[in-house]
Amino acid sequence: MAAERTPQNPPVAAPTRRRLLLRGGVVLLAVLVLAVAPALLAAQPSFFQRFAAYAPAYESWATSTHGSVSCRQCHIEPGIVARSTHSARMLGEFYLAFLPISHEPELLGRPVNDACLMCHMDLRTVSTKGDLNIPHRAHIDMLEMECVDCHDHLVHEPGPHGATTPSMAGCLTCHDGEMAKSDCAACHTDKDPPETHLTGEWLIAHATAPVEECATCHDWTENWCSDCHAKRPVSHGDDWRATHRLAVEINRNCEACHQSPHCIRCHGIVPSLNLDPPLTPVP
Image 1 (cartoon, helix red, strand yellow):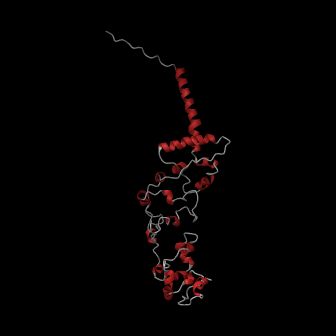
Image 2 (cartoon, rainbow, N blue to C red):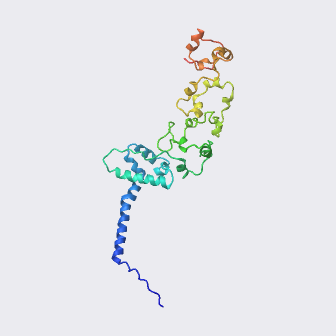
Image 3 (cartoon, rainbow, N blue to C red):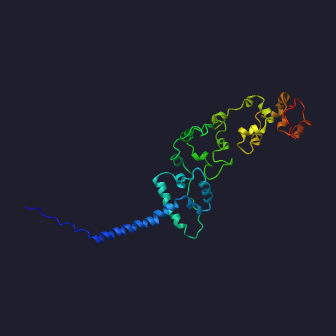
């Protein structure tokens, strides 16, 4: 017995197929024109120039070492969800730009380590000049610090010292001798304390040292002399009023810090005992 034939679907007419393709093309073109292209345009760093809050940051970025890196590469967390969300938001900002309203949105967050590590995979242990020990991996993996904790003036503005590299003052926020080591040699590969600094008389004799020589190492903050001298010396303990006579008998250098009336207030005269001639009295 012959098998029954099943009826075949009639072929789609050529005009119908063309209409379907045309409609699909129109939809695709609309998506490209109304969504994809605006989102791409809004993702360009130049788009942020329209916002007053971002304009200065754009100008500094354009001339920085990161001038070839887009804003979202650093400021948006890596990942499909985070970056798709950002693209969708920037699409909205593109259309809001056509409205006559004052609008200053918060669009870019603080760079996270994952964004930095997309390019900076080789974490240095020493500076490019070889003069600083910088165990980046220890700071990031062990101490769980953020890159921008130190590199806070990298792209958009110079630091207080006029450079984009981390300042020594910033390092000393942690390297204070308690939270982290503060010895010069702990970070500086070629800056062990000079022999003069190791003598017992250095705290007295340094007042006569040329300022230019001091600045070679110490000129990392604007008031580097007063920052130190504003602190009470270690020798001036709680019993200093009673015991300072013994120190003066060995070497009197009060004038290195104190003006003459300081002694007169108690002694009535400026003591001449053991005056150190090399010291220049404070007027």
